[in-house]
Image 1 (cartoon, rainbow over the protein chains, first blue to last red):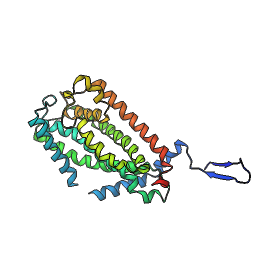
Image 2 (cartoon, chains in turn red, green):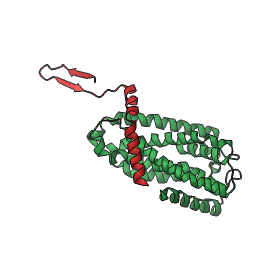
Image 3 (cartoon, each protein chain N blue to C red):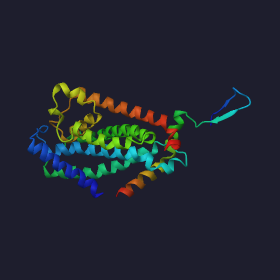
Image 4 (cartoon, rainbow over the protein chains, first blue to last red):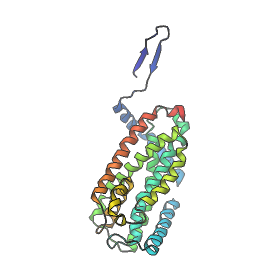
Length: 49
Length: 229
């Protein structure tokens, strides 16, 4: 998880935690969550039939 | 499930009577008008149903989006899959129609999965645009029914693309569903199916552009979904 510290004013330091924006990771996540995809699709199919 | 059969069947009957019998529009080659209409109706029904459910998918899953992390692209993608099931059910009617009219498909039918993939791309592309915009600007939910209604008339669902005058063909091909429907007809009707090569490739390029920009737009707005939904 990349972290970035704003150090412009030492009295007010901010630590910003950002989601990982590496493109490859996103598509890996998409594969990792394939079961959720199947559950959502099945839920909609069962609901419409 | 019954609606997945009744809706396209009744629309096909109405279009065949109005465009084929009353307006006496020409078919492609010697294909029965009902088969011509249904070959266009299949991808259009898939696109319109997918567009509607895709654009509404994030809003209707708001409670899920605001609680846990997962790639948000899963939600509209699952909505498109649901529409694909309806598409498969409607395909039974096409098989029945082809049997009824004794219209045997050629080897081109083997290319149908390719056209289904293109229809998927067009539905996902347009759906992702509308889904992400719908989260930020709720008025977009009123745009979808208008787009679907308008699109039905500017797409070759009830008529053949061959009747569009030559000078309008390129403008007409800016509609991504023109290429998809022509591809479906080429695969299903076989001989005599009309395809304008330049317009067709333009339409395919629009589909690719729609998908790429749709994914980019969705990815750009995705971070804010949980805050603004």
